[in-house]
Length: 142
Image (cartoon, rainbow, N blue to C red; front, side, top):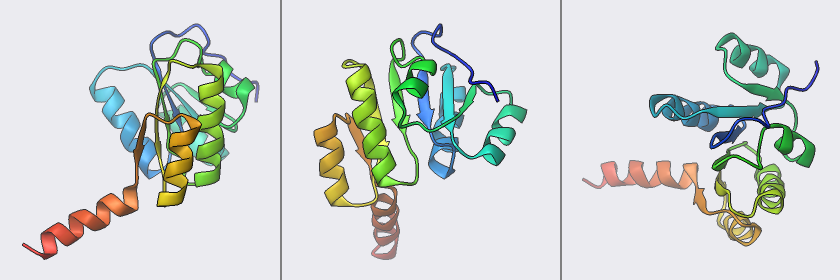
């Protein structure tokens, strides 16, 4: 499959990973009328995304070349939401290196990695498991 290029898009959001979190991010972007490009490395997931007619690149989001083809130089933000903390960290480092001004939102599964993501240049970090468990406990103690 030839790699698609979206370098001519401006002010968009790049979404790295189209799992549970990534698909929710995309739904919210659609609701707000925000243009986006998804980077996903699972060919089966990419087929689904293509059927939805979303902008998608089948590739590894940790690659500088791939982020450039997704238009990172002109993007306003990037959501790094893969289900792999090490890949998220590497993608955040790469994104920050390529675009010093981009807003970087990411996810983390533990506190140690959260600190590393901050050091790497992430602007916003969510911890889905921690958030979910806190919401459950809030309901249980009511």
